Each structure stands twice: as C-alpha cells, then as structure tokens.
Length: 255
Image 1 (cartoon, rainbow, N blue to C red):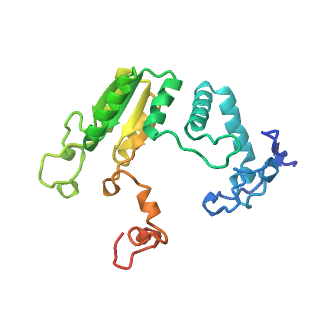
Image 2 (spheres, rainbow, N blue to C red):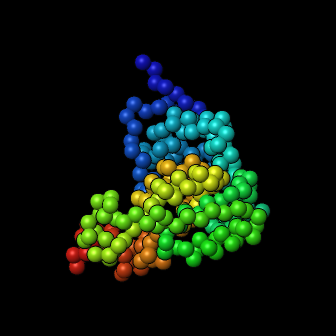
Image 3 (cartoon, helix red, strand yellow):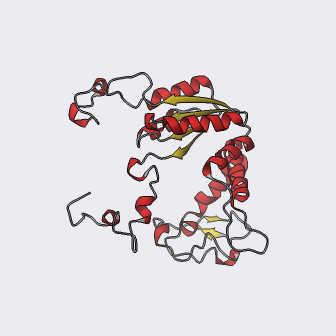
C-alpha cells in the first residue's frame, strides 16, 4: 500500500507520513531546523524531529489556523503582538524586547476587542491583582476579581487531613478555583487571567472557564513567582542552588 504523502507549505517538499513515528526530543536538537536561515534547511533536523515525524498533524494544525475563527484570531493576534513587542530593526540581527508581559496582556486584550477581564487570583496575590485591575480600568476595561478562598469551604469538608494542611488544627479553607471560574462565567468575562493560582487548581480553573484563559503569574513562593529561576541555577556555572534537581537524588538526601 502506498504511503500517505503530505504537503502543507510551499516552502517544504511533499513528505511521506512515516509508519513508525519517533517521539520528539526537541530538547536534544542542535540544528533548530524549525527556525531556519533558509527554507532549504527545514528538513535537516534529526531523525526524531517532529516536523519529519508528524507532517500530517502539522497539516491538520495549519487547516485549523486557516479555518477555525477562534484559533485563527488567536494565532494572528499573538504573532502580531510578538512583532510589536520584539521586532528587529531593518538590517539588524538582535531582537529588541520592548514590552513587558503586563503591557503585552493589555495590548492583546485591545487587539482582540475584549472589554471585560477577569482576574482569578491567589489570596497571596491580592496586591498584584489590585494593581492589575487598576491598570486595566485606567485603560477603559471592566474588571472582575475573584479571590481563591471564595466561599470559605473548610478543607476537612473535602477530605483534607489535619496533617495535610498548611497550618494544622486550624480552620483552613480550600482554594475554590471552580467557584472562581463559575463566577467568571456568570459575569460573562471576555478573558480570564490567572494570577498565582496553585498548581492543579489552575488546571481546574482553565477547564471550567468558558472564556479563554491566560496565565500572568505562576505561583512559586520560593523564587518570588519566577519558576525559571530554578532552571537558571540548575546547571553550571550557577548550579550550586538548584543543581540537585538534575540528579535522581541529591547528595544530602533532598528532593
């Protein structure tokens, strides 16, 4: 039986869909063929390059970008925002970063025509949510803020044991992320922004939210909400602090 062939771009030759796909390992790639200097370099990636192994799926993705109104609008706005935020001057090679993520969020909301923005925030990020709300309101947006502890449901009521609490033997309430999303749905927000929700709770919020969701702040109390810090200090020459994360077990028996 003839192999299926796919052509999804004028810059890439027709490709055969492989019988046995190799799982992508882009973290091992030294070629970066998907960010080529010339179109002729696109298929020079390693054998496990997803461009080579999944041409049919990439073709399907392009069809979605072209024909699905929601995803087309998101893709175009995101790409245009990237250009506005970091465009290289004519003749240059460096990328000039012009906008912070907060500025990008404001600009993106304007580009998409959003009017009402919801901020689903951790109780520990009330200050950040207040500042964000004031910034957005100053630029003509309506805002909705819902704290994660809304409803004050005690953790024991959903099965959390005393020794699993932050403070044992106290009245400690759950992070009620589903209620946050349901309230945002009732408020009919155009976009919801996660501001420091717990890991796992952010996933449930995203699944229940009817409006699109983006994350502005990822909770990481240890690094001041900068999870990338653990990566920057995980390898030489700055591996003295988080280098243990790259080993099965640290020399001192830590995580």
